[in-house]
Length: 177
Image 1 (cartoon, rainbow, N blue to C red):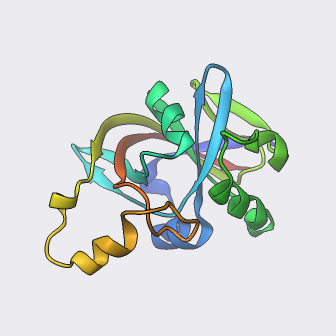
Image 2: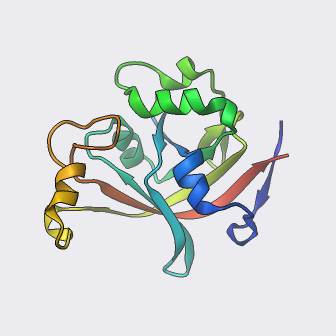
């Protein structure tokens, strides 16, 4: 299979559905190993006159080590037949097993950015900024922060540490032919 590049302005998909319904498989590489993590908390737009994505990653996630070790990462989008794999990659830690191998995914690279041969689309990203959220950053509703932060990090998104926001330029979008 081959891919062709499009510019962010040429993307003809509903971003809300891509993020919240299709989900992304966020992947970065460290010392020759790629670790993917399912992401559904993100946003896209223009910042600093660049097309960007902002992804929320909890500090205790194994993927954080990979993101911090690299200047680039990818956000892969898969068709519905890969939904079970996306659930797996969002609930199992790469500390415990090789999620790429267990998922049957094939890592490929473009411009040093890892993504997967099996995805239907990949956003190639270059980190611009990483900033932590803190309790003081939230205005008003402490019930809101109490639901999402503190205690054990659960598969449903509740609990855990305050997210790090990874702000990255979208350098390329690859779409499967």
